[in-house]
Image (cartoon, rainbow, N blue to C red; front, side, top):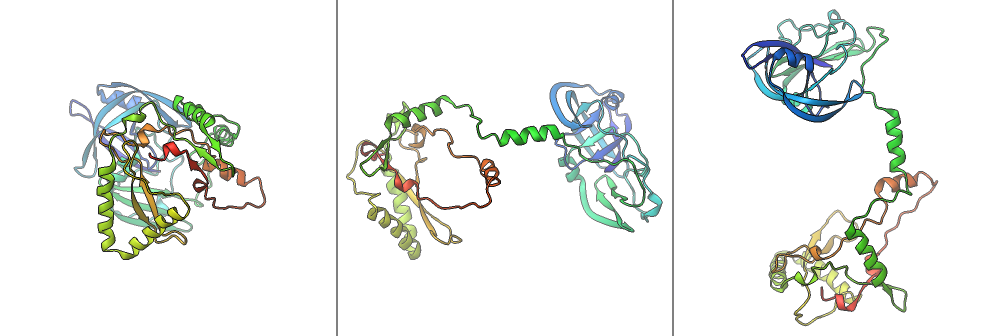
Length: 364
């Protein structure tokens, strides 16, 4: 773990020396309650849960604003610190064999006694820690161990340690609560869990049950699940025409795109997915554009219709349609299910092309 000795200034301009731990994982800056009390800086009330401090979840009820500076140069910065009872055990957990590493004597270490187990008064968050890093690094090797000297705006810090030089009965690591991880694993893998549904989700499902039909060939015919604001959709033809003219202008400079786009639309006509309509007074004109994906092995050009485009009333078609709940399994459930079989088969289904839209709703 990397440590630094900082000068922390209180409101009266007095400086106190504090030992800081530079952490690359924490999302907040922390300070012990005892050290904050010695600074005599006014505290602000808060209620923030801080997880995994000493393996426990800690509730921080206060924070202070303090200015810290380097002991090696004129660097100074003001930060907010949450107060906690304790940040960590002694760092390092045992005396470090400093004499086995040839640390250049001309370097100013921010913590000259980094190898001596001492308490930690301050923890600097990941964002603060990374912002302090400067260009400059020295690797010190000793047998199979490696220590790194890293230059920062505070001065030089020491990172790393000895793996085989000292036999220790104690080590520092991040400890996860196994019972919580197992509980979370089974919660994710619970396929029978029924998520709560919103009022819109329930209404959309009821709409599907009461309005879905099947034709003589067995194909489904669905109706659009309109909200009560169905008739707030305004005029959309002029905007769709403008965007169509813009696409045609783009085609003038890209004949290949024009050919592939027309090929897709002609396929719609051949499959009876697109028919010619006269000008309609009620309904919605959807503008479209071509999405190019050169890496695709099958369809390099895909036509996308924009149902989010605002009409003259400022409301789009998407806004007056119910979305409905997600009915397919989440990715994590699919992955877990893969574990229960020796062999699996994947396939692509042209699902949307098999569903028909009720004739009265096709004008939208």
